[in-house]
Amino acid sequence: MARKGLVERWKKPKKFKTREYTRCKICGRTHSVYREFGVCRVCFRKMANEGKLPGVRKATW
Image 1 (cartoon, rainbow, N blue to C red):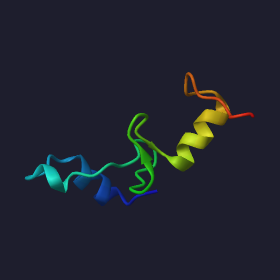
Image 2: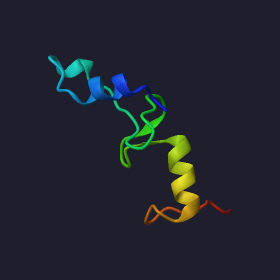
Image 3: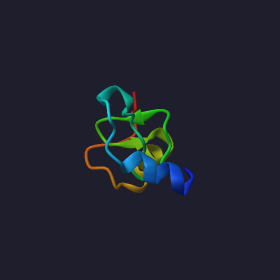
């Protein structure tokens, strides 16, 4: 989990667009965030296994 201060600072609009970065909407993680879903890989995997993401299923081949 991200610190509360970092999350609050992240929500404020940035002075320049290049300073913006993606964060997970659930846990606040900055790395490996899927843009399409807005969540990190850890939360994505957990939500996909629980069936909370429509159209996502485990790959089989």
